[in-house]
Length: 173
Image (cartoon, rainbow, N blue to C red):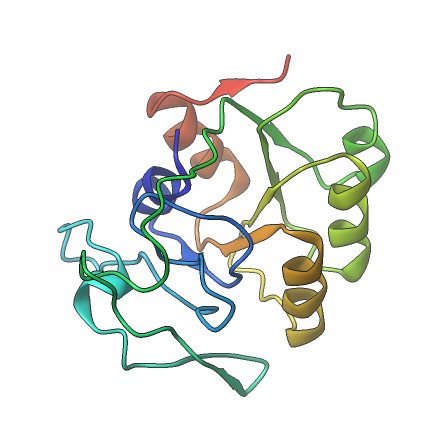
């Protein structure tokens, strides 16, 4: 499952620019804050496809977005996309450190710097913050440096897990 598919499935908001995605959103250093939320319209389009001139903010600080490329999305269209296969849901970072799988998406309600550091140690490239937890600017900066995508999601951990499972992500165990 691609990051773009994950964002559309959970109505998520991408806050970092760590990975290269199928739609290109997030693959440029200046593209943090892209939202794949469709505002309840159900059209599943990413913010890069709608309006890349808008800016998002984290902690009151504006985040720039990249200009559109040939396919209408911000960032690169190189196609070097991470395919996530597994998901793990936990607020206990000690449990996260036991993971030995590749291409794992972490779902958590723990919006702290320690979550980013733990994901880095566990080689996790994508964290979804559930229960409408807000990510700080400091977390976004660390995640960008570490190559980790951060997504904010308004749904509960249970609902988010169910949606991702229904869409094809498998549990770690």
